[in-house]
Image 1 (tube, one colour):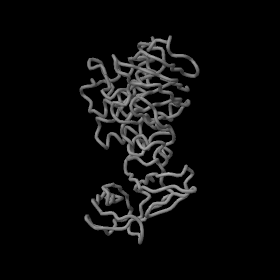
Image 2 (tube, rainbow, N blue to C red):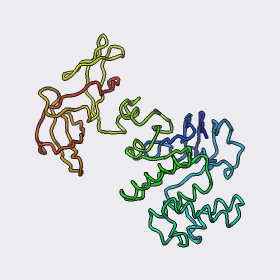
Image 3 (tube, one colour):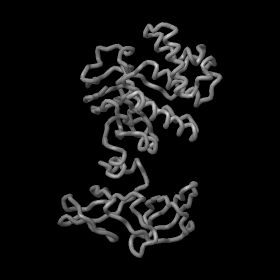
Image 4 (cartoon, rainbow, N blue to C red):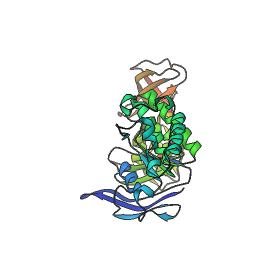
Length: 339
């Protein structure tokens, strides 16, 4: 099922939330909608599901306009962070509930619910109430209930944010497996950058009610289309220089530049730094963080800019040590100078 959103605008009260959003999600694709809190991510999901009225624009699935289709017939399901399980029903009854609303006979819907609970590793909890489950178990039960509705489009609204790190990782793996096994078009709303980059086929980055870049995880991280996108992913700094005759030059590097002449800032991720080089930019080691298989080292530039790099082997540097870091300008992106 292909989802198409065209020039969508939504207001709540007198506040404009979505401002001409256009986005296409291919059939079977896993897309993450990424951006800071309040940028309109959840509003977009609710508008697609029919829970909010559209001020302007069109939402379609496989070319079919959803405007005249009631919410319960859209074959689009949202899994919210708070799960919204019915406390008075058993876990099995919760999962079977969408099938009950579709008129599926009791024996058939119970068999389907039991199969889904086995799939999310909750088969032995079928007769319990939601209040008897842990947070992670409740999240899996809510996911099974969402799948029971047989959606063509599954929308996940920050479903893992309340879980601890181990449970989050397990849920991410489960959702990715189910997405693949059920061949669903999936849209995940998150402000967790690592989550979006690791799970998605594509990422759409939102700011202030608008989508500013869409691309593969590698594209939006390595080649941000705007300075705001670069800053949002973090671990970047800027080197100021000039472009003349197709060459960018700053005090520590030169590189080809297919932009008009002028003053530019070269955005560099931490991965572009080569600490310990003979020439480059002066940096100070501001932190060393052991992370098990890797060690993360934080660097501060003389102008207050900050980067980090991870190393397989523990580096010899200590906090406070001053180094020279070479730079790989081929890993950078040029933006017109600000300020």
